[in-house]
Image (cartoon, rainbow, N blue to C red; front, side, top):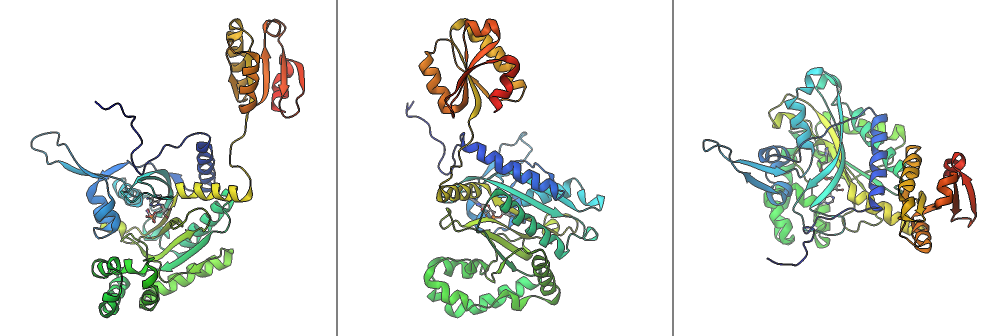
Length: 434
Ligand code: HAM
């Protein structure tokens, strides 16, 4: 057996303290904002039946055709067929499956659901792109009678995202918005695209030549420099929207104008998942993300429930790439010269001998119960080692020797001021919080 150490799998990574504190802060802010907009949390399984994604996200998409972690699960009995399972590459299909399975539409109410969790895609790893990554997402879905199709829902979701990014301290985000039309508009547009692509196909890069055949919409979000002029001259989806889709989009834009959320209409934003109808959007950011500049993406999926065998249930949602959000916050902090590092704990208790270890633990217990963050040393440590360790992680050091234990009065040093004093237990909590 090899004795080489085992590393995290390519494209996956460990998140360690103190960085995880930033992750928790981001998630706590997201939860607080979601609560204010009346969203409740949904937790769906990390793996699902493969056909959920094949039907929901679309066989032809990059995600389903190339990027899924799929395996045949062993059959439990000889008579059973093995089931094909897939680690979720995204969570919208799972949420809609759950909506259908639990008949959430029967309540007649709009369902506003959020989730925070890992997703899995076998993509080429690079900065901001991982094979296990985290999404913070939300979906608004319900029967048409609940108002789920209303442009107000789109605008509310976008306004909530603007608020969330502002509260997280993300500056300089850019909302890009488009409408990909209804299920009937899209095929007409795709047909026109195919027609326009046919005579110019040979002049495109090999990737775009392939896309022109298999999924012409994907040509629109190509970043290939040399192809940009040809792509910009292709027909625009706005010219293929029916009256209802055009009016829906205009109402979304008017509502955003009314609440002061800035946006850019990007006619080439079609997004890489098949379930989208009407409004699609991305929030991009230029700091810290390089080519992976989409902080989050989302849109409407008015036909997804029916594609999965459910009732009519229009919906709209988004997913934030949490890894990218964190990278952006770190890059912003670095550019501003501020550290995103976390605060020091309140105090470090240094027992002066092994005999004080138990008293140190008892004191730590009572201070922690009062809400203070405390670390304890060990009686075998020399005083200098205790001071050095304490200075790195705590705002105060509490010396606990035989005398202190006997009199319930402690020697406390505050590192910021260098002041050292004797403090009685009754005044200790306040002193350590100061
Ligand atoms: P998506 O655009 O595939 O949409 O992913 C949303 C976000 O997840 C991206 O904008 C990006 O920030 C992040 N992301 C995607 N792939 C990776 C990766 N390999 N590494 C790091 N971050 C990544 C969806 O997933 C839809 N389910 C969004 C949605 C919800 N639409 C409607 N409701």
